[in-house]
Image (tube, rainbow, N blue to C red):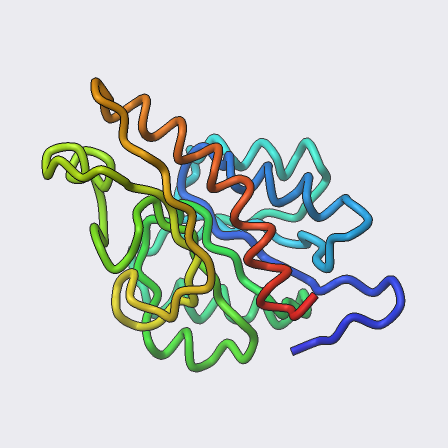
Length: 193
C-alpha cells in the first residue's frame, strides 16, 4: 500500500454501475487539501451509467467492461489497475460481485459502501426490507470487500432513524446524504490519517 509522502496522493479507482453520486462525492473529497487520495480511474460495467459523465466533467479516465465473461473482464480490469498504478479501489454502487481471484490479485485495498447496517440486509432493496421489518434504524456501512457478498470487515457505520411514515425513496435520500459523509471518513480511517 502506498504511503502518503509529501503531496503524493494514493491513486484510487472508483467502480460504478449507476448514478455515481458517491463517485461525485469522492471526486470532490479527493480535491480537498486533507484528502489522501486522487481519483485516477473510473470503472463501470454499464455503458449507460449516468455517473460516467463525471469522468468527462473532471477529466478522469474511464473504462467500461461488459462482464459478459466475468473472467475476461476482471483480467482486463486488473491490467488497467496495474497500468494506472492504482492502490485503492472504492466500490460505489457497483452492481457486480467481484471474484475471490480478483480480490487476491489486487494487492491494495478494496472498499465498498452499502446502504444498510451490515450484517443486516445484505444485497439489494435494503431500504424496502428495513421498512417492511419495522426496523427503528437503518443506515450505511463502509466495509472491506471479501469474496462473500457484503460480508467483509466493517470499517465504519452510520445509523439513520427510520421515521413514522417513511417510504423507500425518502429513506434512500436520507441515507445517501450520510453515505456521502461516511465514505471519506472511512478512507481516512483505513489510511490511518
